[in-house]
Each structure stands twice: as structure tokens, then as C-alpha cells.
Image (cartoon, rainbow, N blue to C red; front, side, top):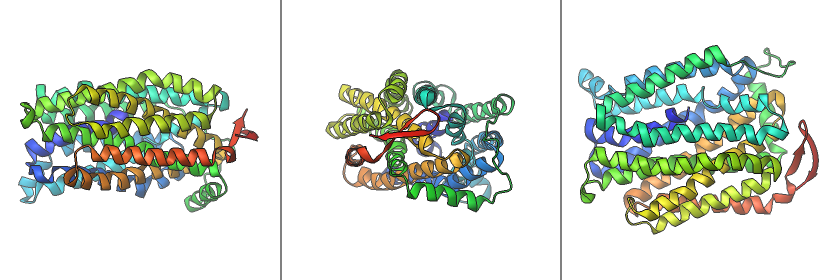
Amino acid sequence: MLIGITYVSVIQPIFLKEVIKVSPEHFGKINANLVFLNEIAAIMFLGLSGALSDKFGRKILMTIGLLIAGILFIIYGYADNFGRATNTDSLVWVFVLRFLYAVALTFAWPQIFTIIGDYTEHESRGKGNAIVGIMSGIGAMLSFALLSKIPQKFGILAGFYALGGILILTALVTHFAIVDRLPKDISKRKKTIEILKEAFDALKVSPGLKLSYAAAFISRATVGILGTFMMTWVVKIAASSNMDSHKATAVGGMIIGISAMAGLVAAPIWGILIDKWGRMPTLSLSLLLTAIGFGFMGFIVDPFSGLTKLCVIFCGIGQIGLMISSTTLAIDLAPPKIMGSVLGGFNTLGAMGIFVVGNISGFLFDSVSYASPFILTGIVSFLVFLWAVIVYKKIPKITGKRGVSHAH
């Protein structure tokens, strides 16, 4: 799933530059707009995806979403051909196909977190989400460190076939290997709108869910901003650094791969901390580390420098901890019968985060400095950290099988 999400950021800059022929002065805006389009799809359909998973199960949505996404990504690689065949601007086809791909994936990837919630209890939930984090780290690392080399070695279109094939293969794995484990008394006859209303009512009375939603807001943004704008930065200054676009893409992918590797190493530690130390302390620490990593990116002049690598290590460690801890807290506080819907809202806030932060970042990248999107992300992370500190004692501490004991 993470390969499906992150590899788009890897191949998109070189695809736009070499195949679609986007002019350099609009590079940041168009990249950002494509990210926004992806998040618009998420905002529109994540809530529905969660409610449908409560009604019909997780497996069917994962299988169909992955299969359609794999086929669409291969077609996405032919956007320029569609433009020429229909005598229209190829960029229009880029936006249409990217949107459809995002919609398909929106029904697939959120089910992972709901399944972890279905299969774990409080004592092991942090570790369960840490395993997801480890696999996410491997996926992101492969996207930036390995699959980023495919366009250079085999051509840009080969990259689209590679990811499309991976998603189709994963759809087969999902179909034959995943087993739904929904609450036994769940009613499939309940209307979708009623399920969504129950989730909204649960959010209104829970300060912990509100904080987890805020953490989700910045959590998704950190991943999108780091991947999209680092790759756009290295490709844009490739010529001045005596590199061609292909080599810059590979080097930029390696830099992001370092961040993913740091997250991969840190994920099991975060899982243990969440289960042993607690959700709120771990969430607060991950927010602080994320703020530090992105904040120090503001001092970077050369994205190929050693300082960049040091900063992305902090970013990677903070990102994975933030993802694991916020998701675990949301699952803990979600009523079991509407867990999919609650997590649908959780993921929707994540999409809104990358939409809002990414929108501002695209403007800052083109108008202020290449490092400004990272500074903005660091500031927002720190603000959510302050919120966590303020409401710390209001968040219930969950123990046992969804039983609530004392507050933090």
C-alpha cells in the first residue's frame, strides 16, 4: 500500500518534466495540485470507505480497490498518448487519471488500520500498528531507494508497469489471504448515514479522538511534503548541480530512502513504547521529534548535503512514531461497531492535512524558498505538540479490552 502511495511522488516529477513537458516555473504548483487532487479524492471518499467497511467488511474493499488502482496506474503512464490521440492537453489526462487512481486506492489502504484494530487488544495494539509501520517503512524505502531507479534504467513507462503489477499482485494476496473479523452482532442492514452519524457523535464527546484527528492532520502531511517537495527540489536544481533529471531522481530517492530506513528501525521501538509507556507520552514525543526534523530543514541550502540526511533521519523517526501512536489512540477510543467509520474520519483529517499544508507549501516553494514547505510542516507539528501537552490529563488511559481506567 505504501509503495502505491509514495511511488507516485517518485515518478511524478520526472514524468511531468520528460514526458508531459511541464515548464520549470510551474513545476511546484502542478506537483502540489496533483497532490491536492489526490487528497480531494481522499476527503470525498475516506468517510464513505470507513462506513462501508463497517457494513460489508474490510476484505472486499481492499481487493477491489487494489485491483482497480493497479490497472489505472498502468493506464496513467499513457496520459500523453491519450492527449495526442484526442488532441487535448496531456496534463488534463494526468489530472483525470491521477484522481481516479487516488479514488481506487482510497477504498483499499485505510482497511489495513481497521483490520489491525479488529485483530488486536490493548496490550498488543501498539506492536500491531508498529508492524504496519515497519511494512510501511519498507514500502516507502523500496519506492525511493529501489523503484526510483527504474525510470533511469528501463524507462519511465516501466515504472508505471512496475507499480501497477505490484498493486494487482497485492489484490490477489488480499483476496486469498485476508479474513474479516468484524464484531459478531454488527448489522449489515444499518444505513450508511446512520453509521457515519454514530462516528461523529463519538468524536464530539472524546477529547482523545479529537487529538488523534489533529495528529492525523499533520501525520499524513509530513509524509506527503517530504516526498513530494524533496523530489521536486532535487529535480528542479539538477542542472545547476551538474546532474540530469534521471540521476537527480535516483539521488533524491536515496535521501528519502534514508528517512524511510530510520523509520523502519525506529518502528518496533515506538510499538514497545506505546504499549509500555503509554499512548499520550509516545504521541507527544513523536510530535516533538517531527517538529525538530522538519524545522531544521529550514537551514538547508543544498538538498544533496549531509545536513539534509541528518534532518530526514529525524523526520523519519518522528513520522513513524506519529503514525503508529495516533492510529493506536484512535483505535483504542473508537467504539468497535463503528471502528471503520471513526478511522475513516481519522484518515479524512489526514487527507485534509496534506491538502491544506500542501496547498500552502506549493505556493511557498515557488514564491519563498525550496525549504519553506518543510519549515511550515515543522511549525504545524509543534502546534499539535502543544495541544497534546495542554489536553494531556484529559485523555483517558485505556487498559485491558477497551476498559477505561484513570486519566493521564
